[in-house]
Image (cartoon, rainbow, N blue to C red; front, side):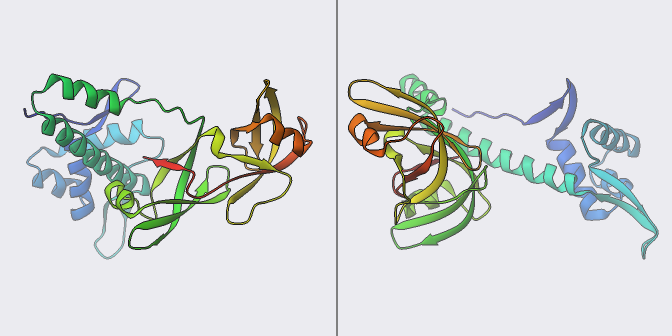
Length: 257
């Protein structure tokens, strides 16, 4: 089974960019001229100019701009947004290729295809899902410790296997999600050595005969939920509105792309 598709972006129901326009941007970046780029792509100057105009009009900031003067008498260059647009498209194209390769490897087995689709749209029981950016990676033969900065600015460390690092192609510029089960998060009046410690405020407490569920707001504005035994929570003598520490082990976290 062979499956093919194209990536096409629209903005307010207007065509924004796809493979052809990305190629045009790459040619403009190479030649520094709309005319030369159009010639290389065997398209008219007007068609190229109209495409550039439409992309510039639909983008929040210009993608292409003209420069006057200089050694070559000026020309046309990509803006920072133009380079970002190309990089975004290339990344999505790579992800798309990986996705279709996975589909094709299933062949015509309908049951396997159904199971694969369920995996691609899975839901997780992990209550806490945090956006993070990788800032450093320390590796050993079998493992890797990721240093991450959360969207609220808090720094944490997460341990994953070396195989996961390689298969997920995680680098120092990767953005990912950190998944934490509520039972992996502990709450304390003091920080815990060897763990990720984040100061937080208790915003809501719900208890039953055995457990306590605590909603937390970190200093950076991330909302989390921790689950403790009722006895452990009572020993802390904490109430709603109090400040405390939440902590979890670097190995008690899952990363997802």
